Length: 357
Image (tube, rainbow, N blue to C red):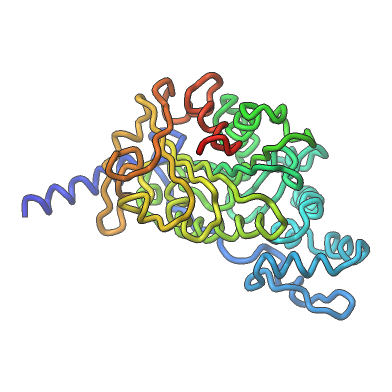
């Protein structure tokens, strides 16, 4: 009975502590945005040259890629103009078409908070204005990259605040820029067309807000894992290399649940509260699993338990978990892993470039 009571106390502490990057504010329960993109009903009712369009809810990304490969430019552009929100979020659709579709979709919202995403030099790979909004942006040349990395962020990230001012190497876009710069293959502005590494800042799921039950349980992570798995299948469908997933904080919970459903080459968890698995082997992935935690990262104070759905399980940096360790002795706080000159950033860059065997 005493042990059971201790477990309850630990679970309660986990509820109070597990969170994201915004600090210690109280969290609000979020409704996960799931399913096909807005405009799907009109898309399903449409045809092109008498052919039905692939159902965004059921068609595999490879089917989508095959469908678009069979269209001429006139048909593609007609679908782009008629259904920008669907084309822009349709895994397997041609990348340049998605960039243009999302520019149109952003402009169509008429909302000032999204306006910067429509700039001509941005490569917005996904944009969904529902809820707090979801967005994915490419830094580098995803069509021709030899290596691809995906930043999967934690709490307090959404499309509405994506372009808000932050410290330079924090937030999904800041991490993506820093990683690309560290690989030596671009300026990190997203405008370069050369280089061997492309990085995607992916806010493709509904993240928790602040500290609360959403951050301590796996409901939003489970919904996010489905979307992440489909996103990586979309990368595969357009011929991109198997990605490296860089998973921060609650994002590592998403990655842990998605791991066996992705073709990731490497999965890197940093600042992680747990991956909903007892060991790296339990993730059931062919990817190499890495973990990092800085000495002053407050995530170390989160109890590594999972009880009645609360908490995210074992510490990925523990020896028992079995992940490869990423050096992080000079990392400051919970968001300092991509700071210039850190051991962690140098290691991340080597992993992103496939230099570590």
